[in-house]
Image (cartoon, rainbow over the protein chains, first blue to last red):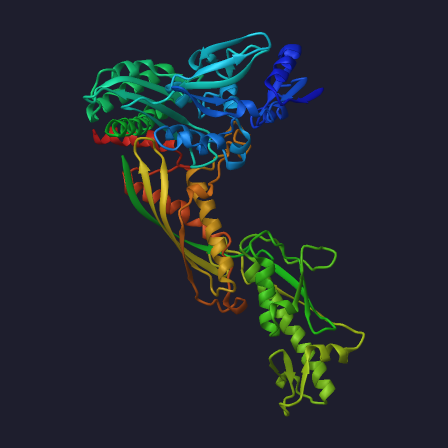
Length: 291
Length: 332
């Protein structure tokens, strides 16, 4: 039973309450995951700290070479932000693929990250951009790569007195691009059966300097796919290489999902979703070379 | 790779409960003092447009504008039973009951007028723009309001019914008349199959629906759009996921139905071939408009990729696995 609900406007107030109540408290932002879990009895916090009116963590802004997104920024705000309309359109696309407009108006990036569903739509593009999480508590603040923050199915490295303040990642450099692809049963209001984000950085000759591939719903947590990344390194990305890379990913999938009923489907589908994300990333990288 | 294919699905559908089961609709019509008519009928409006279409049928018989008909339904205290809003039967069955009841009311009004005029032939009284016309003197007319005034305190109120003409099939000979009338329908669709992910998108669709007579074309188009969406969901998404008697997909977050984002514009063709036993020729189409969708989609998938799916819904996982098996057989 919820005993108390606090509405806070400043992060310090939220951190103070978290410090007092620690594991008995839950942060409430959009509520699109938490309220459902509470109704179904999966979580039973005694204290709710409503941070949906906390405007200072709602920022989406450029700081030098970095893009910072505050944890209470909503999917709608991310989807519509000018920063994500062109070369980083994959981030807007991932945000747009979540739920319905009503859900996107409420749900926040912080909730998507901290809920840590294996199918969370923003996680693959953020992982591919090597996003850093900024974690605050009353006393301290620490920085953790998103890939270390996600530790398992709906499990994170967040401590009970901490909150996620924001995430940040570096802007796209020249000759680099990001792609996102999601496979759902329908075209809206669908949870990802599979999703993938690909970041590419090419050299002047079109060779791949760096590839970062992140998957969703292909294991217990959204994650980087190191084997296919290593394979793409130093390659000129053409049809043959794409085919071979897809096979590497199939092998990874077969090992990871061995014995699961979804394997026969996912080992095939992962290749299609990967190709789609990769071709978008490639297109953006080449365009950013010309401009 | 994306592959396109086309398919059609044709169906015929028997209206009503059928097989000799008592399929009865009853209704009451009452002439009000202001000359308007109230229809009491236990037909249920479930969004299909029963109130509109059944009011139109009464208005047509009474030669009144729609605003001259008061329609009372879904109230068991006031209305006689007209059966369920099921089996696509309300337009046909209850439409017939209302038509007969309205015709009976009109007949009684003519009897009243004949008595007032002192003529012995009420059947020869004609109707002109909402008025009863004297059989020998066209200048002498009575409005419905005047007919009601002649009746005084007593309201003119009649009840009638309609029973569908079906018989049970003979177990020995297989002879009989299990349904009447039948409705015919064809869907044509074009799909795009993503052979990398198994995802099927319906990119184009057309529906030709026999309606007997289109009492309300807009409502028919609405039913076609709705039936198409339901049929598409049935073919591609909707799965209760029954496991040992338990429905695993027991909520709309996992029991998926299509959204507007999954539906192409449906081209709608209304085919009018009046049915002689139907009210003004009109038949119901509630169920028929969804029946041909799944067969058409499955045929189109076969046309696109050569895989004959025999289980629905054709979700990406099922189709992709079948596709890879098929490619394996062909040695690709």
